[in-house]
Image (cartoon, rainbow, N blue to C red; front, side):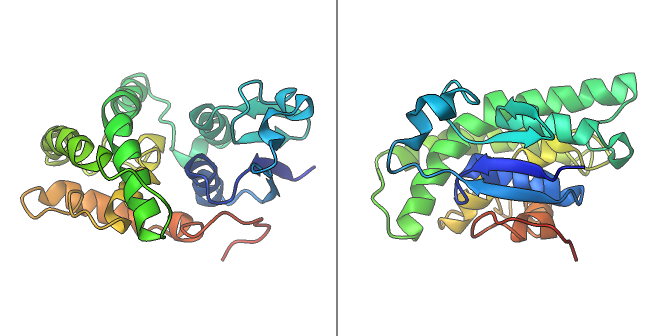
Length: 217
């Protein structure tokens, strides 16, 4: 069987998210680094496979798929025994609820703040005016997360799912960028959950950038 190919930019957050799920499931993959500085993302050849000129997309033995969360769902669906997508009707509904919360509530502010903070950390130009307002929004959202996580260990229930992993890498970037909002002592359950996610080998393997992975420890 052909090795799955992941077309992306090694340090792009979306590429990291897909690679983290691949690592969780111990699926070998080859990273095909897409050069972005020379306009490769907008070439007709690239747009044949990703019509929006974004990263990443995968080629799984000829099956082409783009959009990060769709890719992650596809990968996890191939391995239902992993439990990353619950199969019971109620369990799946709670998973989808949590995944929707991540996309519509957490991601908008965490992504904007996280990227700017991370760029600052590594010495790239960043927009410091964006961060305070987005962290203020995120702070209120995390109060709701604390309520949820005080009742259960993970956002979708009692077991780890894609809904949790979707929060990476922006949850990590906010912290790596110097904010303690994800680990604040007045939200102990958010801190517990965040620390577990960011200490998983699947995230740590690609925290500094995704690389081709054929074997797993």
